[in-house]
Length: 179
Image 1: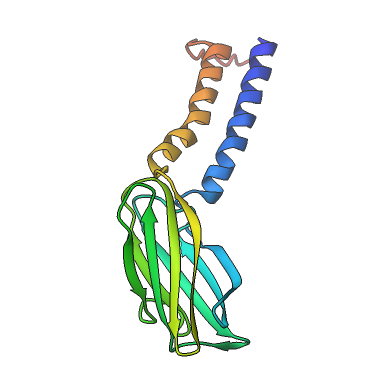
Image 2: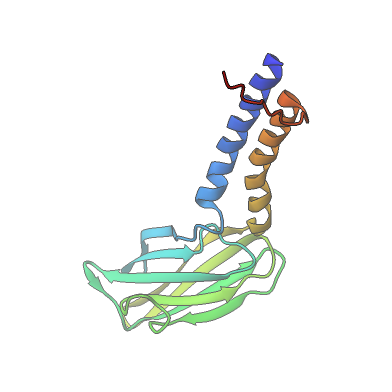
């Protein structure tokens, strides 16, 4: 019985350790990821980030681009974002200020329908120069339905342990004897 108890505790610890990264970085956590950080694009420096992190097929992929000329934001450029799935047709959308959280950024969003690798290309047109850059994005399946099952598993294991340890014995009541 001691070996079973130790094994069960070890399994529970390993399970909780394996669930923690899923809950911390899964689709329920949201957040953004920087894919390009101050990379030269034409005469400017470009930063690009995407949300959610990690991208999943149930969400839109939001791509935000910041264009800087030194410390000054460039707001009069035309930015095109082209998202291409591995075996699919590219989607080309102009990134605009109206969708961005800041009036200095350019944002575009794309519906993502299949998991797998995608290529995100950013093209910039400006009177001072043009340029393009690209980066890969890995889109995953949503994990939300599995998270709840994984969260229930420790409770089921504890219940199994209690049943094996104490069995299905009925509760006994003791009568109080008064002197």
